[in-house]
Length: 109
Image 1 (cartoon, helix red, strand yellow):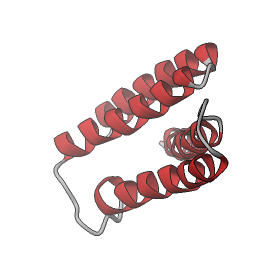
Image 2 (cartoon, rainbow, N blue to C red):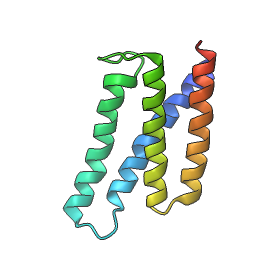
Image 3 (cartoon, one colour):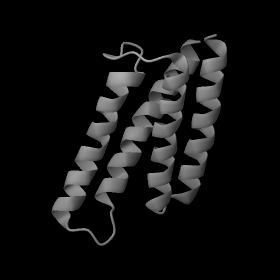
Image 4 (cartoon, rainbow, N blue to C red):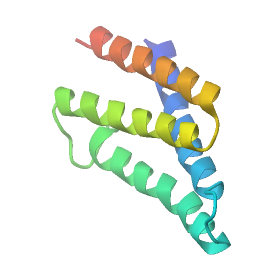
């Protein structure tokens, strides 16, 4: 169980890094837009995670809603990686995230 929790935490950090990477690599955007997006998007995701998804969330939600929110965050992280041109990394991240979320949910029942 500790290994699953560790992998889950690393996936959370990777999702934040994906949003940061995407923001700073927006094509055709001005420097200030890239900086704002590169800093702002991971902050927004971290706030969302801490508010609803984290084990000690300030607004706890049901396990089913948490499961859906986790898939949305990880799916969005994979999507922004893909949009940034990191196709293989996005695919790998999404596959690991799906397996981890499903496995975590199954073992915590």
